[in-house]
Figure (cartoon, rainbow, N blue to C red):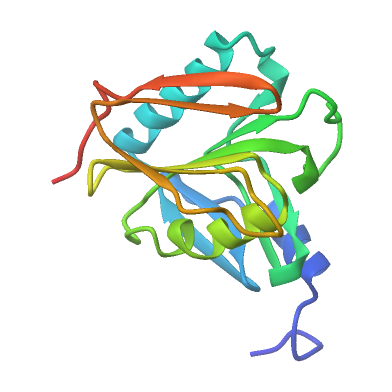
Length: 187
């Protein structure tokens, strides 16, 4: 069924996403022109909170640590809402939606889709955007995958860490330390 035209523009889809009320326990994102709902449960919440706490422990002010804030990625007709976004010191406090250039680091927790978008399109898009560090926390595999130092629109080979390890990375000149020893696991 179409509503007056064949295809929505990226801007129209972002506008729909901004006003969309996702069901409780879900996060809505725009992935390659499609609105996608991903479940968020207790495990996701615990890991997201740990990521936010690590950023605050590194001395960042609260306004530089966001969760589920929309950032457009027009190249692929996407609009991502990273589970944790660590903003650059030069970022705007009032920009809406959040420019992807304002994100220094992103943390994503794999949901029940088993990480297709986290390990695929987001790796590509975050590298193209020049995001200094991208951490995927996967409670299904009990692994963290860390991408850093994008060059020419791509990240070099990632580092992997089992849950239980300490993960350290630098973004926008600040070092972040995540102790994953008490991170919950699924399965």
